[in-house]
Length: 272
Image 1 (cartoon, helix red, strand yellow):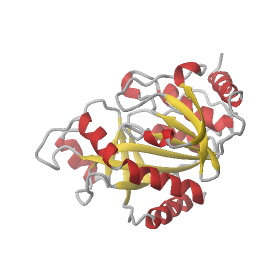
Image 2 (tube, rainbow, N blue to C red; image 1 turned 30 degrees about the vertical axis):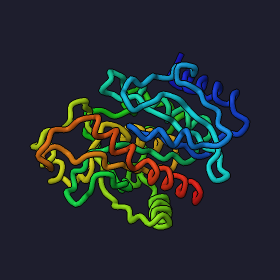
Image 3 (cartoon, rainbow, N blue to C red; image 1 turned 60 degrees about the vertical axis):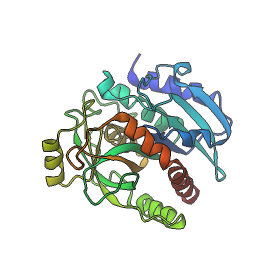
């Protein structure tokens, strides 16, 4: 069975369980899954009930797809994602986004918890991703191209839609938030970066760093979806503050800003 066949089978399984196909989807990062619980008239599908769907075993990633309503829009929310550092290949890491594309999703909101490289950021800030740098050493499009997904050499000049970034600014302003913008770098993980690596990232123009989002953004653009990215600056990166990094800190910060995060996503979705 080809990758396309597996993706299509999973998309068919979702279609069979929902009454309306979502055109907007959100992928929820570490500790940010509470948004999925806020959806109205929701249909919840654990990942292990969907064909070929890879599971995430990371704390803070619940592992279910929820289709429900936000401000009159039907959306799909992925509460948790799998990561390359868990041992998955990048085709598995991006499987869910492929399914969303075949399902009929046109706009995907990619969220993550990230380390703040820009020393002007504060812990808990919500950063709009303007661009990214892929430092994973891999690309989910490597291998034979299936034209049913998209063209062999997709353009990456505008990965993150300028129009959607403006929508995010409007939604933030409506909630009294001035959202910082920046460049997100994706590294393989799972170890956090060293202070020297963070100095290097700052030198090449990185504002926030994490271990997700970029492969999904590449695949979404390959399939012609519009992309917006939001990073929750859950901790300051290594060397910025005189303290070690802990995943518990990430989860505590995302818990603290949960209300702002949900409000921002609702505001974006209501304006799309």
